[in-house]
Image (cartoon, rainbow, N blue to C red; front, side, top):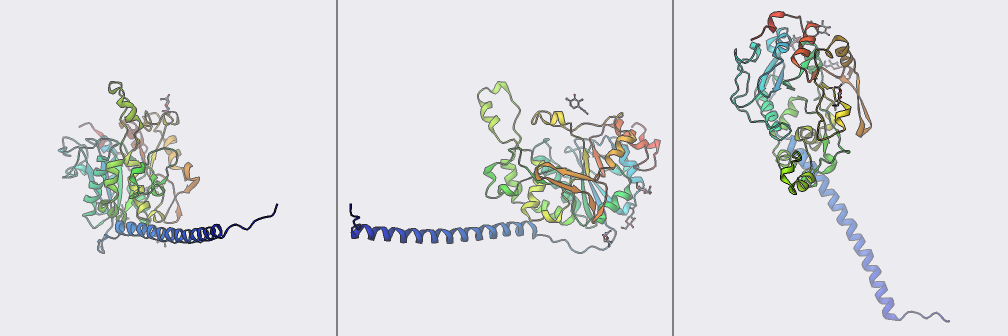
Length: 377
Ligand SMILES: *[C@@H]1O[C@H](CO)[C@@H](O)[C@H](O)[C@H]1NC(C)=O
Ligand SMILES: *[C@@H]1O[C@H](CO)[C@@H](O)[C@H](O)[C@H]1NC(C)=O
Ligand SMILES: *[C@@H]1O[C@H](CO)[C@@H](O)[C@H](O)[C@H]1NC(C)=O
Ligand SMILES: *[C@@H]1O[C@H](CO)[C@@H](O)[C@H](O)[C@H]1NC(C)=O
């Protein structure tokens, strides 16, 4: 059989099609390049917008640490903080408490005069695990920023205790030019909601402990943010617990993304702001997670509360000796340091019962033990 040349028309169409293919692929490449460029420019401008409102002037004088307490109502461990602040120079710190709206700290609600009148004038009703928690954190940071002497901002819960005396903590935190924010990739859980895109791209999504220590610049970024927080409010919500009365609606509710805003917000915001390279990616607050309850995610992932029995010198020293932390999802070991000098990882611990805090106090690590500070109200 002789091979016949294809008719002219077929060859013509073939040539035309191949030209078209080449042309289209070139066009596609160009378009892709353009898109990449505009994406990186867009990301750059987001980071720029988040960071650029830093209007803090230069401040001369003694630098303060702002201790920011996030309380449900009162501060049950006020007696240990009383001893802690007694050894401090009043010019070196300030105290702010966010509590239930209307709750006032005075002689009738606290044993420690250090907390008198320290509640914020403006406060919100906090629902644990919801974005109102972030509202409260932002109010605390905002109040702290009003005093230009405040250079570091430490967020603490009403069950937190210090593991060292004031001067040790002051020098540790002040010597570091960086914030301490636990932050890692969140690959295991499905908390990222695709609806957050494009404002929050998935690769910027982070997880980490809520208990942060910020330098002034980063505190300002959190307070000024009006881009990321609205997205959190809309799309990062806790999944309601199973309620059999709701019948079929449960199916829909249980499919919802289960998101805990305070475990993601600051770390995601800092990663969006391209500030991740400038922080120590760990928390200063020790929490003991019960592995066996943690696996039941969504049910009982609460940390273990220290009692009198497990807050003895041996247990406390074990916490103080920890010098590195391991981030499983990043395969990253974080050797703890402050201002490039190796240091113990943890300055604070939670959650402590009153008995446990009392046990810690009698060990004298926080300051000289003074029995009169712990007399009942
Ligand atoms: C504070 O604690 C540090 C370290 O634990 C210790 O070396 C120092 O003497 C203590 N300072 C005061 C004033 O008690
Ligand atoms: C208070 O701050 C000053 C100046 O930064 C510092 O020299 C001093 O050691 C601090 N006092 C305490 C108790 O940490
Ligand atoms: C940080 O470390 C450097 C180098 O060791 C030292 O010169 C500097 O004084 C330290 N900064 C503070 C604030 O302690
Ligand atoms: C951890 O949780 C399990 C189950 O709730 C409990 O049996 C165990 O005692 C807990 N461990 C600690 C150290 O609290």
